[in-house]
Length: 241
Image (tube, rainbow, N blue to C red; front, top):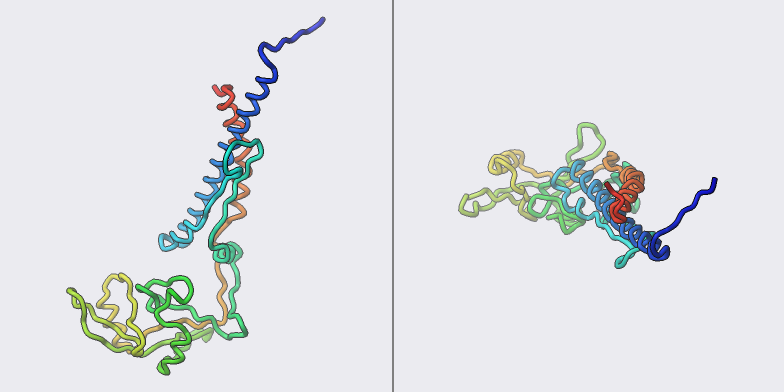
């Protein structure tokens, strides 16, 4: 028995069209998967650190290669603009004072611009150097004995604004930041009664909890990619049902 087969049309054109469909499918698949991995990593950050970490979440960015045109071998890159932060919380890093220092100085919410901690010294109202230079800073030990609370004495300034909010001044150095805490006046009275405000926590080291799984997100994306590519190729070549 003999079998015969015939191709109707221009074989070179058929193959060229199939390659073009494959290129479009590859680009579609890698673009969609890259966006999904980026979205998952952003969601990990906001879930782990709540809405206060939107800036860190949005620091996840992505790029597709080639930047223009089509290719059967595209690549997707997901990266972060704050790699040290992400790495620390993915590993659960142990952080110690650098340069031979004995303690880490961690600013509290009272020692921050608008009552919220920022990045580096720009987010602080008072730096450790200013604490020392003020000559008024004093230490209160933790009950556990593992560290100290670094404080400044507190005094009341003039009431300001239409709501006549109490203005608190720490050590004559800076106004205390209280952000938008509910019951701000109650916070102010409580601090005045104590006569001090905690500006820094001094700890010998901090062990960060592992909160992120970057490797896992990448591996899940790689497992999804082949199926996404096949489905896209079938659509591009008109074979999809």
